[in-house]
Length: 167
Ligand code: CA2
Image (cartoon, rainbow, N blue to C red):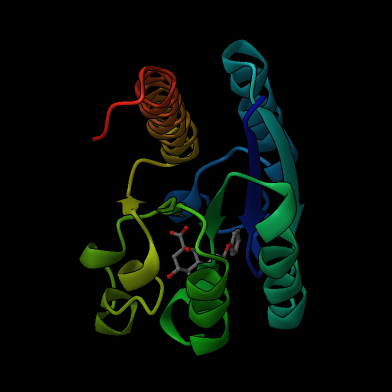
C-alpha cells in the first residue's frame, strides 16, 4: 500500500474562520476529511499534520524518509522563507508536491518566490482544497506507475538471468 504524508504549515489551522475571501470557508478538519475520503478510494495510507513551527515540519519531513513514499505539503508562509524546509525535502528525496490554496502569483510580489518549488516534483496553486485532492491523485498515479515499471524491469532481469543472457 502506498503511504503519503500530508503537511500543512503555519496558520492553516485558522482555515474557515478568517480571510474566507482568500482561503475559502472550509475548515482544516473538513479539508482533511475530504483528503482521507479520497485516500480510502485510492487505497492509499495517508497521515496528516499541521504545525505553526518550522522545526516540527522539518522533523515530519525527515521522519517520512523511511515510512512514506511521497509528501504533499502546503508550507504556507514558510514557502517564501524556509531554506530549512527546502533542504529537508531535498535530503529525504521523496517525491513532493507543493500545494497552495490561493493563486500565489496573483498576490503580493513576495509570494511569487517559492523556496520549495525547486525541490518539488510539481506545484498546484489557486485551486483551493481541490489542489490537495489533485496532488494526491497525481502522486498516487506517479508512484503506482513507477512501482509497476520497477516490477516489470525486475522480472525481465530475472528472466534473463535464468536464461543466462545479458541486458
Ligand atoms: O495559498 C496558500 O495556501 C498559502 O500557502 C497560504 C499561506 C500564505 O502565506 C501563502 O503565501 C499561500 C497563509 C496561510 C494562512 O492561512 C490562514 C487561513 C485562515 C485565516 C488566516 C490565515
